[in-house]
Length: 375
Image: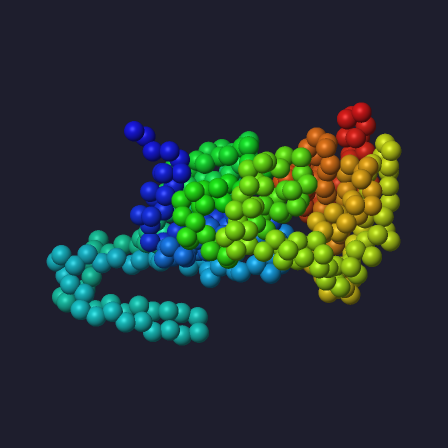
């Protein structure tokens, strides 16, 4: 009888000594929490684990209250060795040593007989030191961003377990667990782990998963929140997750830097488009410096502004950071915004460098046109 997807997942996992988890470059809170939880779970089962995301939006800074896994990295540098291989069938190597200067490393090789034949040595790359690769929330390999661009071989040399809930997932894994009906990725991981071993779903694992479900469902307020998400949240609380702590950190505890940046953003608020449904805010480099804040706060600022204007359908923040002119946008119940103006979309959020040949006024006009077309 063929194994189910969860059975295939655990068969590979428990045959592994070392696992790597790769998250999207533009990772959101739900995906980050799912990755944290899975990394803690693997550690509890004595499986070595590295969690990798380039995290271009600095999402991790909004989740510092969670227990962080041991090995979290932003790239895969030094993931494999470069090998100088000598064949010793006819001429053994009796000694190898290295010397280093400021700009050079020299490898000294002493053969047993005479000199080394050029045909007896070669340059090679070592195998990756991972038995399995878990991708969480990646619709395609390219969603890993710089991790894929800098180390593409790992996506072909290591067996992949691809876990996602996106309808456009390319199913690039050896095992593809695409649960399109789930309301969050953390719901998928919670369901998977709780069915296998509640003993290893410790309070740290449960706390990360509950935070991810709350983040992915906006504290169970999104219309796509499933009954299973509510049931799993209850199970996670029984495993030691503290819902009050999650809600306090995510919704009630606001750092001064956030409040100051929010205040500056609101002073620039303008409305346009049909029914004033396009809302625009502006922040410059000094706003971030003088409030000691960073762009990872922008989703929270938009969420706060939305609470006071529930009729707006496109929110845009034009901002400058590290001398780059950028755009953060969020849509509410409208078709996808064109990538050439707004960049790639993820969960109704957009964050991109503003193209040099496209003005702010043109982007605003495009948002207004889209809403007119919707009518």
